Image 1 (cartoon, rainbow, N blue to C red):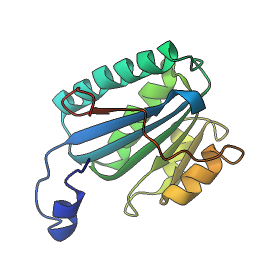
Image 2 (cartoon, rainbow, N blue to C red; image 1 turned 45 degrees about the vertical axis):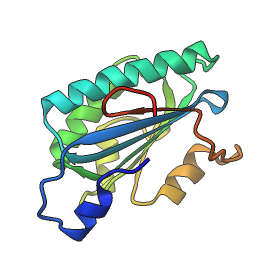
Image 3 (cartoon, rainbow, N blue to C red; image 1 turned 90 degrees about the vertical axis):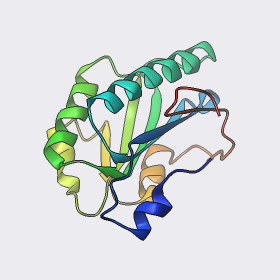
Image 4 (spheres, rainbow, N blue to C red; image 1 turned 135 degrees about the vertical axis):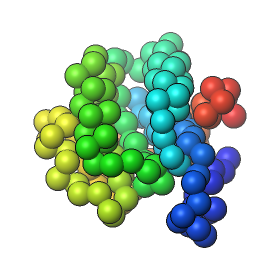
Length: 157
């Protein structure tokens, strides 16, 4: 499974199409969402639909609502801090299935935006996956086997 991050790294001025990948690990109540490219409302709507499908699959497999650990990697997603705060605040105001969420952002974005989104006990914004995973799963073994992947077309990989 690949995405366009190699192209973006080669040419930062390239307008990269938006996309996402959602990987779920119901046995660990863990979800990883990777976002990339130039986003608009249509892409956000598609993500909402795919996220709802992934949550339903997690619950069907026995994961408990309110106990999910969620990692969002948006290092390759291009949008402003203000839009990021609005998007994630809306998500946290809804009945989120996540107990804790770690968001990996590009270094051009301040990690202090976390305090404008959700309580510190529920959200970490960081620049590295290692820090995010340590915060989410400090007492859980990390399982690298993907059980279900939903890509930006909405189809399982």
